[in-house]
Image (cartoon, rainbow, N blue to C red; front, side, top):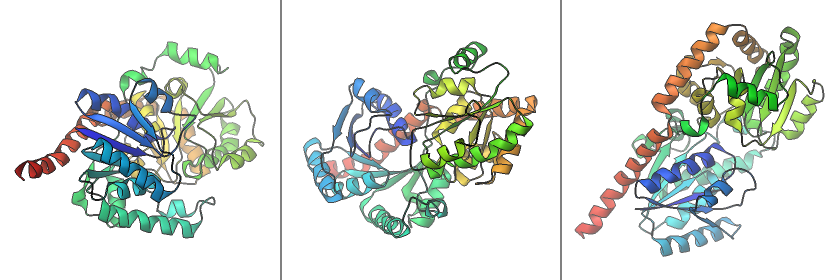
Amino acid sequence: MKVLFVHNGLGTGGAERSLAELLPGLAEAGITPIVACLYRRNEGMERAVLERGFDVRFLRARRTLSRALEIRKLIRRERPDVVHTTIFEANVSGRLAAAGTGAVVVSSLVNTPWGAGRALDPNVRRPKVVAAQRIDAFTARHLTDHFHAITHAVRDWAVETLGLRPERITVIERGRDPERLGEPGAGRRAKVRGSLGLTPDDEVILAVGRQEYQKGHRYLLEAMPGLLERRPNVVLLVAGRKGNASAELERLLAGLDPARVRLLGHRDDVPDLLAAADVFAFPSLYEGLGGSLLEAMALALPIVASDVPAIREVLDGGACGLLVPTASPAELGVAIERLLGDDGLRAGLAERGRARFLERYTLMRSTARMVELYRGLVAPVAAMIGGA
């Protein structure tokens, strides 16, 4: 079996890391993956995927129809059994390209981009969002055979927003490799803290995510003045590449002690940062799942996160992390302070979070279920061709 993945690029996002980690398992299962990327990326997973020898094609076209024609030529040449697309630009180009080729078209539903949270983003023009939603919905309903949703929350959103039938959507959670993440421990914690100039007495809050409106980092920075008044040893680290919210975050940072609040930019050592932290903060305004949540759970780091459907699902309704209203600096600060002041609460959340990760979110489980999905979708097509 051959699967052609159509992605925007192999950057720093959760979808990109999930694909990069999925590829070796697919190859071991006898599936030949090819990755077609709309863009090159300087940061993220691109180099690692290329160094491992996987077949990656970078498209030269820059317009949707031209990309679709280029991908269509690739489909005609390579004859994949499945064309698997992810994220809007790649979805539209890949769906158009695969129409009528005989390949099974699968799209991953990885976020909730057409909801109220996106509409409030000052960097997005509403007419453009409405047009994109209509294009996404039309090509989803008419040019896609099946859908892979990374949470039940995303599936429900797609049914309501895109008009998809629930039976066309299979929920398979993303996974992370426990071996890559490593284990938490006093030695690792001390080493990483030393490299960052942190002391054993510092109470470290870590947030991970690109500097974009969706990730809600501004509310975390706005919570810091009050939190520092009550707990002066607090240090906030924000890891993630620059984006549309960077200017606003820099403005907020100007009023804070730079020794206590740091924007680290893109980091390749996020698991180490997690191992060095005391609390993981995830103040996103909307999410499809939240890949860094899984990594925090795997490393037994207690979590404070926004109470949005996908995050609530991952955290088992709040059993594995404290949930707070979105866009609420005061409540975010109170929840963080509560965790820092209660060793038993931190330990309990950490233990339950790690157990849930091992039960539902390992790479091995995710890969096995994706292989099962591909084989199940291709088998009826193969049987029909064989019968003919």
